[in-house]
Image 1: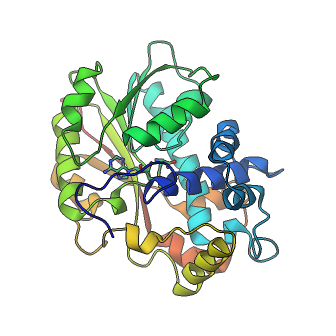
Image 2: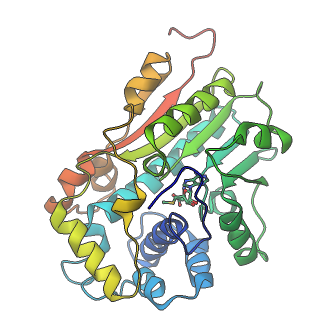
Amino acid sequence: MRTDDDSWDITESVGATAIGVAAIRAYETGREDALFRDPYAAKLVGAVDSEGWNSLMAGTLSGQGAGGDLGAWSMGSVLIARTLYFDEYFAAAVRAGIRQIVILAAGLDARAYRLEWPSGTRIFELDQPKVLAFKARALADDRPAADRREVAIDLRQDWPTALLDKGFEPDQPTAWLAEGLLRYLPGHAQDKLLEQVLELSAPGSRLALNLGTTGDMADEFRERRRKVMADAGIHLDLENLFYPWEDREDPRTWFAMHRWLVTEGDPVALLEDRGRTVPEAAKAGMGAHILMTATKPRGDETQ
Ligand SMILES: C[S@@+](CC[C@H](N)C(=O)[O-])C[C@H]1O[C@@H](n2cnc3c(N)ncnc32)[C@H](O)[C@@H]1O
């Protein structure tokens, strides 16, 4: 049961979802035909020291093999597609000269370590204190590829002040990321968070996000996923951690209303364009998943 001020460690409640997505990145990284490589994912998941999570990332969960390939679950496929999409989003942001990056709900995202960043890039990672503390312990021997700064705070609290205290410069354009976050916030908290992003964004700033809508997974797949994971001792009750899709604004319209330019990614095309076969069964769910970038125009661009 979620509450407005709940908190968690990495293995608890919403914290465990960060392990889940890192496990899928580790699984993809281990494939011969991997579409991206995140060498930190396996290290982070391994540090949790759980047989269930280890078998998920190794691809050896019962039912995960023939026909049960993680990629066949729309969520696994979306995760792989969104990793590609957000990696490219950051590459484009730095090509456009942006040097200030804010990763909201960073979880076990290792982009600060694994992507190439121009010198002078500053990356702020925000998440709950215990989640960031776990990550810091697991990656204690690794060096980030940019000036990485942790902001340990709940995103329903006054995170803008905490971010400013860590050296965030609101007059500089920022590339924000909200990956795997919004469904864990109630609609009013999503509105507030996006309004705070707006206030802190200089012209030329952009934000990328993903958001599963109500139909993002057929019941049949949801039940199969739940069972496979429960059999391995992973009790992750995603449906009870999510807040409803129906009680929130669609961020595509929300940003358009605020005169940011919105573009959308297509999770299926992202995979198929790279030669990955997407199972038909996963396509409907993937199509119901929002993958988008919103850009705040500079003064010289039409609004
Ligand atoms: C599915 S994980 C995604 C992590 C990361 N963005 C990724 O894609 O690998 C969800 C993350 O959101 C964080 N999160 C959710 N609600 C939050 C809140 N109110 N304040 C801070 N972090 C939050 C969780 O701690 C967790 O790390």
